Length: 589
Image (tube, rainbow, N blue to C red; front, side, top):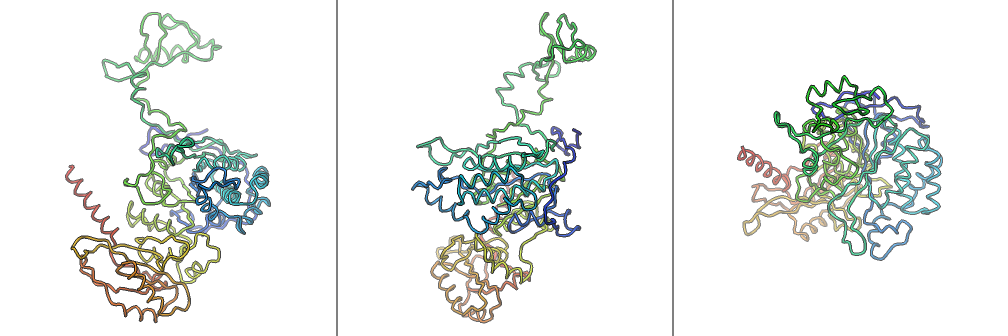
């Protein structure tokens, strides 16, 4: 194993890189990159199904580290796997079934596995899925496992020979996922299972009335081959450990140290067997090296007749090596600076540990379920290249907003954004998608793009009361107090719309006590623009601005760059927060 260059500014970390991989199985269909000149330079963010994206855009053995935090339902009762649902968990079970159903997509995925599409599945992997079908039958949980199998197989394909894979899950499904991981990484291949990391979240899930409180997540760590990129991670020594072990102090230097064993565990070493300071032992070093260390003051004999020992200085130690039980990383707190309101948001310190351990600066990090973008943000901060994927535009918009706020607007110019509508035909295709399990994707894209990611999407899948999204702006109420006023968004994709939709929006504005509304239409609707002018204006006293009460915006206008120019409460408060922090910083100095 040869060493590679250490990361700058991290002198305590050691990196090891492996050897070239063995010949890999090639897919039946070629993997097509966007274009040679676009493939490497920029970070990439993909909106859409990650399986399609992995197959179409990510080449074989090009990724150094992959971390995924796929959807899993940790509130499900374990017995629901076998369709034995208790009354107390019916709501959670229904939520799981709504997301994972045995439908045409699940059947297609199942057929791709058992027919070994692209040659990316092992014999053991195929037999595992066939066996799980007999046990679980074709239902929601098997659909979930098929979904994961398809994507893990592609992740194995795209990892470099020295690449690492971390899968974040919860104990409900972890044992099934480990079987899948073993069958893809280790069955007749050079991949290795390395760790089951237990992350203690601190905050317990539920009260422990009938069982021990659930308080941890599982992170599986696998590598593609035996040779990996690895930078050991350390944490500060426990104070008690320092007191118990580093109890000696050099009077001359004040350096704290402990005594280490100098004897050799291999007793059959005649060349290392000799007398030193009156003691004959099999030593770790040659006599010449031992004498030099003694002369340099590194070897001490506490009293005559005692076995000499080696000084191990505290200031030369990197800390306590981090093990596979992580209790020192807190979850994201609602009052914390990282908090984005994303339900499954992970702390940056968690991703920082993983990325630092299994990659170096300039390496490519991939997250196929990037959610609110924690892995992407940390990779950007640690000078890694990154690839993010998510199936909902709400996540894409949140990531772009997060990167802009953390690293500046210039960062967005280095991102290659794919899958997001760039012309009318692609917007129309998104609006007319037949298979849209998450639904509302066109609405999300239209509202978040027009509002510069400042609006909040209405997630109701059924009747939404005519409201597809909301935003808030500051104004004074009748008492002269600062108040948050609602702006409503309604999105329509019909080709022909009557003026009644504007009247309906106005009625919703009145009903909800909002002050303004935006009607976003897929197709241009001059008749609606004309109708909207009948409803007057809204005067914002705080901003000293007057706005139309209802505005009709077409997708074509959005694609041409038209955005909402009204400063929302979020922007005003963020600006105030920045000014406050700036003032506090000056006071501290």
